[in-house]
Image (cartoon, rainbow, N blue to C red; front, side):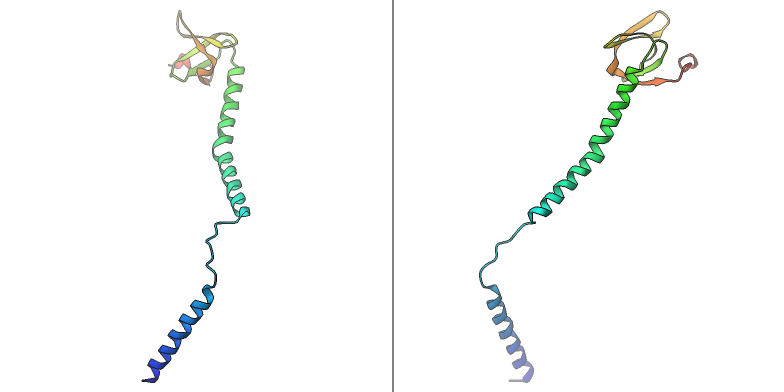
Length: 123
């Protein structure tokens, strides 16, 4: 046999011997450690908090402040797009004048935003 063939045969024998010795007992596949799972779960909670829960709670707080500060004479827009002037404020409802002589009772939660004074006169 040629020298290269003998070296190739020897290397093949060494490789198979090393693989058979290295196998030993079969190793079961292991997932990530408990610590890594906790870090992943904690990161997921932080992402959820900063991207979803915190902005929503800030918007809800701003809306509560807007609704609690409503007073007679304020100009508002509802979620449905109705613009009008507040004529009476009660605990749950706001009476809004949408045009001369036309008033509507609207729930406070339906108020979307307050307009600057005088906006309705320009419409």
